[in-house]
Image (cartoon, rainbow, N blue to C red; front, side, top):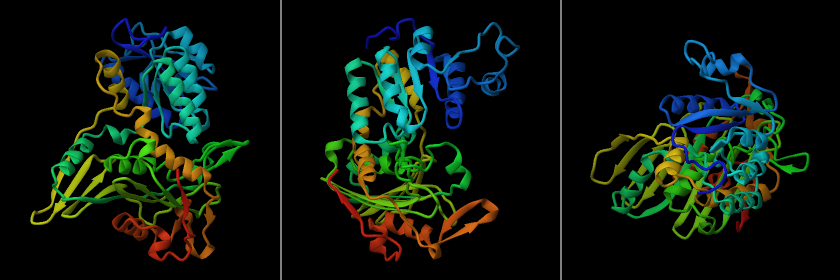
Length: 401
């Protein structure tokens, strides 16, 4: 790996974080954790308005105080390129609005900085290719922030599949029944939008909050690259007053079979999302946020296993320092980006009829009646909402990716 900011001085590696508020606060906490382990050092923060002393202290304490004797606060700037130049950062963590991902990734790559790029990596397949090709040409490493793909459960489940624990795999389903209140869609100008000022955003349930369900289901079915995808069927709906989908399903046909994902942000009783591997002799359920697996197979009692997880920034550091393989390189998200593109090209989500949902004033959100059962049934049967008899589901939109 080459470039002006390529690792060469040993640990800790200097890191710049672009987007330190909102979801970026999780990255701040994680950078502090890895800084305490001597792996990284927060060298800079890129935000439109600088973090206050109090915001920094929340995660890093008072600089030059009792907890950080002699330490200087990170540089701050709204200009990522200038910040990378002045800090010489080896890594840029990009946690900014979806439409900015490609341009910022290429700015960082052009300065030799390696990348941890938040998901979804881009709002369209064309932007994804521009990013991935540009990063490859720059010769820097890029990790896409799908944390679930760092779970040690994934290789364990793949081994189970390969050894025939549940027989022949007949398909993979995924279900996500979450709740998001009205404030969620008001948190930023791009929230809940398909496009903003003529630029693609595609901030829907399948492509952003529950994108892990899609990418994890595809990964467990062995369909990670763009060329692994055949047809894609989508049903995009919304109960909220937004542009994007909040209640949706997608079915992807691959050379190995079908992957069906059903999600909602309007659950009656929100629960943990999961991926379900269907086999001729049993099934494997993976609650990907919990790293928990349940194996059920013919002639055996159920077996539940909990796994560990490798942090993606820590994996990137290991890749740069000792050649450890990246867990989520851009090409391994190509199939997911084909789904994003199918959602982007599909007709705008259909507004659910007023009698299909109801407001919950105490929680400031909307629920779709019966959606929890439909989401579970879709994952269980690999069917779409319309095939399950949901009267409000429109005929599916078919794309060839």
